[in-house]
Image 1: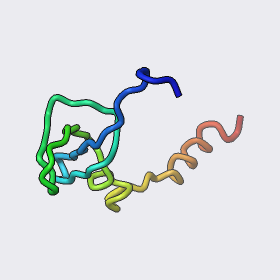
Image 2: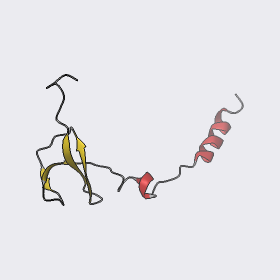
Image 3: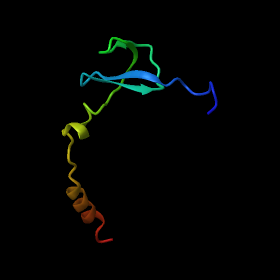
Length: 81
């Protein structure tokens, strides 16, 4: 691997403000914000819009789309052509 062409890979805290959820992982993302983590160290902070704590698929609040009604409407419109 070539030296000095890759971004720094370091610990970063990702936070989902809508769900009040944060996790520490390693990433190449950079940020001007910092946060003091549970271990007492200061890490860059990246705010995300959606995480596993707020996504409808993972929380069980997803909606089921009525595909049967759409199929029936399609058949009514184009079924005899």
